[in-house]
Image (tube, rainbow, N blue to C red; front, top):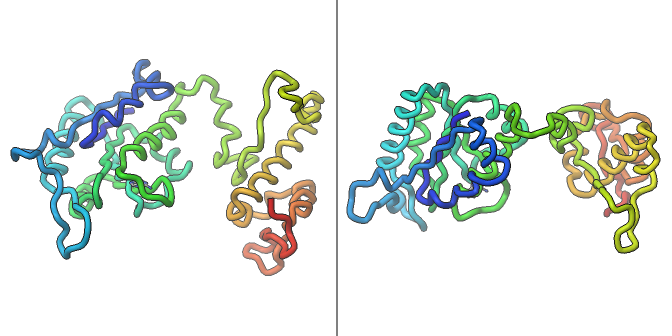
Length: 277
Ligand code: ADE
């Protein structure tokens, strides 16, 4: 996969040389190119921003440098044989970045990132490139960062670990929170490793039992416990068909019950007297 990042802070992307993404790069699985947007400015001050039309606070990133930068990077990539680019624009007003989108992006051969600083990039830049390629404006959460560079690192890492051969053990994706499968829609519960006792704290006995069925049940109960506590919205979204008898017993203990008026029928919700953790 080819990755291009155009930014006014190339050094912010140094972490792309480290850890999983760094190793994927060293192995040639990721071909990363970081470009300084100011390389496409032609005035003495290397200006990349200007005041917003209509007034208001802050500055807006100008069309000129972005257009010239993206055109050059696209031409370079095509010349090197890259195909089918997608443009990713991190912004707090984008659609939420999810595991589903990470999977979709991991299947593309070429991702181009345009992280903005200030109040964002002149709208016409996204509109222009959307005529040539998919443009994804994505938010990594409901908070405002000083710029999109940290979001580029987040998206890159989520995508890179899905590429074939990047994670050592393909099984490691299987139980990821948010991955499809048996635990779809639930958060992962707690995990433990040796030693068996640490500062007087031991391991849940079931995990030492060697009994695969009981261990799977325990993990599922803990996933339900954690999801109801941290992300009740995910439980509400679950298809009730996905809950077996034991799930329903656990959900009842946690204070959740099927909503007779829920859509689809029997969707779970928290009882008025349900436990808060
Ligand atoms: N830029 C600033 N805040 C952001 C956020 N929450 N997600 C993506 N890009 C951003």
